[in-house]
Image (cartoon, helix red, strand yellow):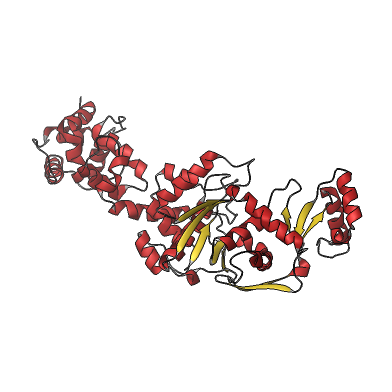
Length: 449
């Protein structure tokens, strides 16, 4: 059974990079009849907030991303402690006492010698008496994982063959001096215990992968999944912004919360992100179609750029085909299906419908139509009787043209501007019956008095 996970930290609102990772995991699992685990990596109690956690649930639901299981790391601290004790017993987890200044001095000395700034494993040479003395002097150990010798290698489903020499990497810290377990450790324990078969995440985690594979192999014998294969990995190149900069959760990000507020449709976002960085052009496809066509091999190795204009164009296509029932609750109070049919083909964002509802049902600012009195007087004089329908605009403009000799832009532009206050917009044949005779008369009179 294919099983993947999306493991956000509730330390901020989801941005498009997070959404892409969640979506790709969801599509990968559903395409193969697998399962998706939503795991909250919530051990950062200083920056974690309940509203961020709720925001994760809300955003995923909004996008249509459903998960099959939920877990949180804060419920598993005892499990991490138990595994840590097993690693200590086998000497793979060892105590260290250097402070940050001492470590920085070691790194600087290695760099001056043009050597990689790798931890020297000095703590492994400490005697039991030396460790006891350090603790007696008030030092509390933090714990490093002793990496294997040789090379860590894997076949990445996106990036291809990858390898890292363990000798060029410092033994990672797994447990802080205050006893808090770090992501590298907790993530591996969870992935192993929860039966994760594939890990799909951003390329920024590539540097962790060889270490996590080594850790996975060290931990597996202590679990019920001793014979479980190491998960397969797929690292997606990170999305960059319009100028090529990285999209960060904290700085310069585009949050799903802001996209929703701006009126971007969730279907447009999923359709765009599902193919961002692939060899396929974005298309206004529903989730079912994206699932059916999904292939992890479609993703390339180059960082894709988030193009807001391309997303906006896709959003426009989605809006133009949405039925009234799908948007009724998000339209202004009183908006009708006839109104939606009239304006949807002219919208980039759903919230633009508010402006057109004001045009057909409220007041508009008086536009500048100096020199257009003759056209507007003729319009007032030839107003057709009610009721108005789809053919009223054509009949009315024909009568105005006959009375004034005006045609083309000289005829249509002043009428549109007087009746809507806008230079362009939805077809007037559809708008006119919605505005109605009384409101049309009230908008024309100021120009002919």
